[in-house]
Length: 316
Image (cartoon, rainbow, N blue to C red; front, side):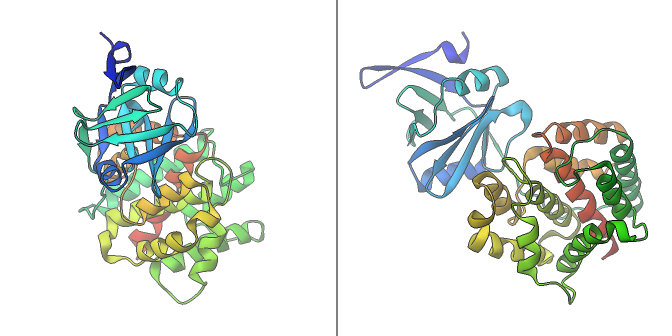
């Protein structure tokens, strides 16, 4: 019998029972701190809950797991989402390890795989990484990747030129300068004001996670792999996001930046960064496509952030 056909009786009411497949360890911390929440937002195939100040994303495990996410089998995630509306009350039943949504649905976390989203420093071969970066940049140039960071074909070429360390021209001077400012912040060199740099990028662009947020998340992921906790960029971002984040970006964008500043990322991004360190092009190609499938432009914008972070981190 499918999960969505199972019924449970609670207080004289019939509830539909569902099973989650995977859950970030962070989710249990959130639920232990706050047992009552609400449905924050609903999309085509997923939805978000809010408990206290923290968000929980529920969607298809095939699409990966957010650092604050719960993953269900794809069909069940779709079916449950269609029955969810915004502002419904949600209660955490700690004893039975289940979420009670709108007094109509029980989502059990009893059988979940608990996922770890911490990305730490790893050993790497600079030559292998550079070869992989060049291969991805070539695909970015020759394929129709949708990115919110570039509004025209020319702007996309400017980004590629920067990633390839090509000479600056008058036409792309403004964009290159903004990337250079990020470079300075990462390297902690004398130059731009950190708050002004984050003001420019955070919340920049459209969508649930603006393109500037995705770029910064990608940079953070690269630095987590290359430098671990020894870099100051994450600390600076964490301070900024804590103080200004909700004023600058969306709630969803804020959540991803909040966790990125703590070296915690979406499962697809972790897999992508790990694949960058390997010498198997087939493995890299598969996770690259998974990344590109995230959102309308979020996946590509995050990939560009990873490329930029690697460019900066490998030179440092």
